[in-house]
Image (cartoon, rainbow, N blue to C red):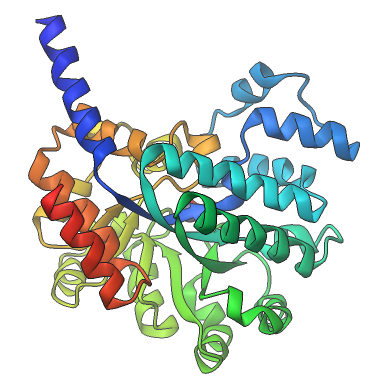
Length: 341
Ligand code: HPA
Ligand code: ZN
């Protein structure tokens, strides 16, 4: 019996591996693995409160979003030079290659770095160089989404938007992350209006720790094309119907949600319920170095704990391409590959 279930699990693992996939919710700062954190700390002479990888992993016990954010912002302090951002991004692309992720749309948080005196140019240039190399050497396409930290003021977000304008060609969209409580979408309405005027596409984290009203707020005030997380939509039946009928995608992050106690266990996660209600839900890793897994690990968790079947797996993967910022031709190309794979 034990042998049989291991065999079945391996078969599902192979199926997950073989499908070309797309990731839409990934914070590049959240891909900083403990080994690289220690290496960069030493190179850049940054004091860390951890002596080794084991101590870092032990510190990664979170009981909510804020307890994670405190550690995540502290970890990002080892990123100083352009080459650090390039290396960070390159290491993530190698993980994509391993998982057969062929397209990725990554967030970066400029304010986490500019607030420490790092130039915007340093950050975006390092990320951009790695992404170009990823396309040339690994065949991975990508888009960049600049996220505003919602615990900071709208004025600071506006200044960040202005700083990004010379790099518009490298940045497809803007997003909103960090602590939701007390920082509702409407706080950033003017910033998003200006971003739209300048041609950026918009997304926002909503309905992770904030309630369902944050999701409708992001749609109505910020005019987002997709919602990051959004799992608390389940608390509002009419909102769920709206998300399904308007096909507004949710970039869901199962391992993240369990680590940050949005759900107490993976068995309680609602992603497959939302999928079966016709919502465009997708699977993503959020901050994989902190939450214990990259995209394939997230899919595997859905199989292990929620009995995800092959039809659901395929639909989730197709949804990601559908919800991406790729053009129609590229979407059709990958969806056809998924259907025939
Ligand atoms: N939520 C909010 N802010 C974040 C997250 C998240 O999941 N990851 C990194 N910043
Ligand atoms: Zn996120």
